[in-house]
Image (tube, rainbow, N blue to C red; front, side, top):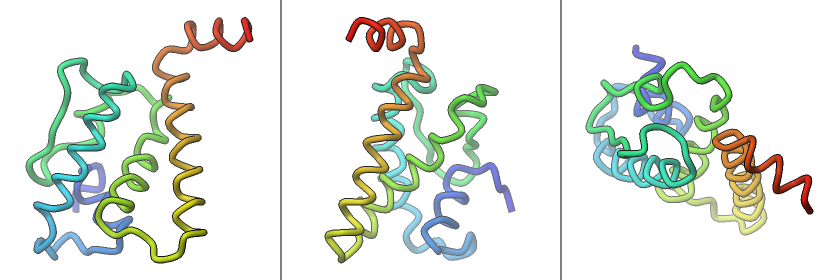
Length: 122
């Protein structure tokens, strides 16, 4: 099992075994949407990044930069909302709050100097 595979790790977090591939194309589509959002937020290559199978790793997307480890949780939460949204509005609201916090943290991590100046000027 390639535990650093983006697809495999997201499937695991969604409760889908690596061997079960029926939903792979749907999950890949959602992962690529979230990776596009992350590119806009300043994570990964400015040219963008997509996956097509379980061969793409988190290292391929983020490199060696450990300050973006929480991106994995962000991708999971966003894909979960797209692929298998919760029935409970309270759970949905909680997930959206976590996503919003992670987006803010991603922005700060992607450009800490600009955001630090912005925070100090407020």
